[in-house]
Length: 350
Image (tube, rainbow, N blue to C red):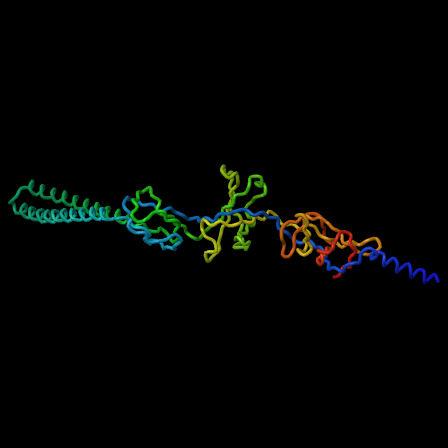
């Protein structure tokens, strides 16, 4: 009889949780700690260590533009030409003057030789020979000067062809055929698409956290990592306009994945520390506030869903790092969370 009464009480106790609400089977996951990077995203500009603005050394009308913005050019390749006709005429005139000086020089060479023979024969005086030799030296000097002038003018003629000083990529070309260019005119820019650097400005309030060797991940607009690098330059001064500290990181991405003047996202890693990681499926949002349901064991041995607010940090794989609200070893519910309410009876599975 007593056994029957005890059995009835046990059945009543087991049925108690279901009296108001039936226990729901749910999948649970045990929270574990993982190494999590503490990082911040900033905007970075890719710049070339070797960049130049091409400007003419002469003035004149632009006659040809042989490149377009974005073109790859080789060292010595002509990119723009300026009308050289005036300079060419000057070179031609000087070449004619040089020929004239050469003819006079050749004549005086013969005269010196002739006067020397006459002097040796006693026909002319020493003074006549000296005058012939002086005339020879003068015409030799005139001819040498004419050669030097002609070469100088030819070198200036080369300035009418604007050539690439090194292999690189053409930037913006703001001029047009027919424009008049002077030595102050910016024709285009040339950037060597190697030895690139990422320029990153970090707010001054984080100056104590920045250091050489910090990991930097360069990301595209979709969050894809283009390259992982590290800070190798830290400015000792604050930029007055941006009120930030300049950091530089070398860029080695190949196949034009990154190009000079490109804007990308730069993720700076401040430190790495162990934190609880919550599966994405366990996170529920209500009014913008994230929370999870924890499978909490009750005094009677049964389980109930306990709604717990959490603060989420970085994304780690298929989970979120939790900075507060949860700890390692907690069991969070990862299924049927849309049907749960606080303190609802559950049956943990898995």
